[in-house]
Image (cartoon, rainbow, N blue to C red; front, side, top):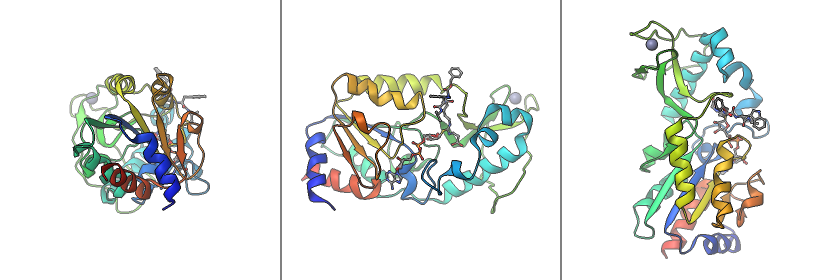
Length: 254
Ligand code: BV8
Ligand code: ZN
């Protein structure tokens, strides 16, 4: 651990009482889940988002997308929260702060499984499903494919017989209104933003930390490479979530 970098990070975070942790796929990288845009390994380097994460592709042919999301749900269900997820949950429950809230772009449930409460999912969840027409929720039966398959027929809605879809926000779709409002409110209330593992490319999500920045709130970024949000960071810590967050929370409690 680079002691100087840790002390820089602690100096940004020390004294904050209401913390907003804004996370992206890099938060779950240390749990073995792929990020989206990392060179060669990112999801979008293997799958065309227009073909597999857009409402138009779903309308044309839902079966390849249903197969892909069920496969991904199975992978995420088998993953474990990493030390970064657990440190955020520990921080929330500690006497060090009043509140620690997580606003995530991630569609896995690792923050919740680590013990964080009140997690805001801007882009939905791999474990939520609903009817693609009447939006009736569909209870996930947990029966995921054991290997990647080309096509799977989505179940039919018991109410209107239309295909059930993943509860994930696709490109060109609006974000869930209540999650967005809550995330905005939190950026207006927070006195520290910790940005972890996001390239800051996807909007409107990436505009959220800017709300806090414009209020003069300190921003700590934790990511191995520079991102589109590095320019608003008080300090951008070149490291990983699983090594930085435990050290930060330990040092703040020391
Ligand atoms: C909307 C769900 C309007 C699917 C996703 C042109 C310019 C600007 C914007 C647009 C544009 N054209 C279109 C848009 C809008 C578009 C957009 O932003 N496009 C981008 C790509 C340019 N946005 C939308 O379409 C949104 N909707 O605008 O609707 C509207 C309004 C009203 C009414 C109707 C419509 C919807 C966006 C949501 C799309 N869904 N995913 C699926 O996942 O299957 S996007 C996808 O990107 C994920 O949700 C992901 O969360 C999100 C952001 O990615 P990151 O999490 O940041 O991941 P990434 O790989 O990019 O970065 C990882 C980072 O971690 C890296 O920095 C890496 O270095 C770091 N890292 C790696 N390892 C570690 C680490 N960090 C720490 N520790 C480690 N170990
Ligand atoms: Zn229906």
